[in-house]
Length: 319
Image 1: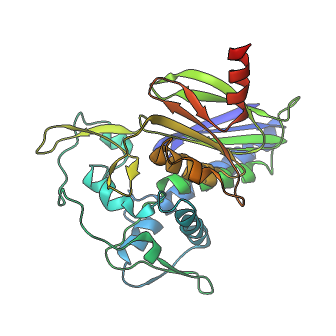
Image 2: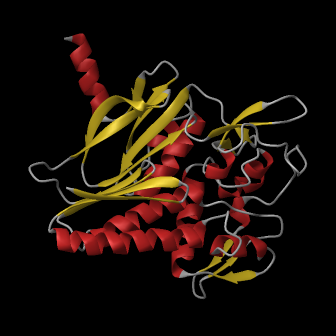
């Protein structure tokens, strides 16, 4: 298995492939370029990205690229499937929390300054008010609606890059900061080993599970954190906003990993399950059209969820 690593979308990207070296080199180049083009399209931190131009177009119809339109259609679908727990319209809340620049820049500061905007949550249009015109591939955002597609776009790009790399490899995987898509079978095995990170100590592995080709994504309350100065003193913040409150989510779980057929689906439901927590998770798990399994890690490092590894661990503990 040969690898190629680089940094994009404010995260570490790993491309890995099994096959002839000459083919893999061309595949790595193609996947690398696809991800870089995707960042220039979907980043909210680049003034001239397509997403930034879309947000500035609020109040009028916007001609979207095929890639942007595809991700927006997925976002619209997942918003309904999660009963609003996945909500790209939280961008004003992220900015209010101080996440108004890339995480790389935020980490250079000990404390993020108080928000320049009103510290209280202001009324705004709901994400469901976004309109998509399929025939002309146009998007309408009502005035006051601004969206962030960071997570779902990252998952979608990881899958697109892996499918591209697969044209040059017998088997391959793209890992974009924990959002993974695997294609084919590893030599001698039908499953891929995946390390489950301890959200309390990211360098530590809690367990290893095995997944068939498809998507895996993890959402964590401890991965993207900072402190923000406010009138109440320095406040701890993280990027996982509960759209029902506009504040960083608080719950019993620290991370959720979802395994499914698509990385974008895994990304969305990992986030939604983490916000929902153990008391509301059951209503999100039952979805006939998009089945998935998940592993949640609580504040004591205990695992729960629906993945078969949990049954195996339980059987081992009771023997």
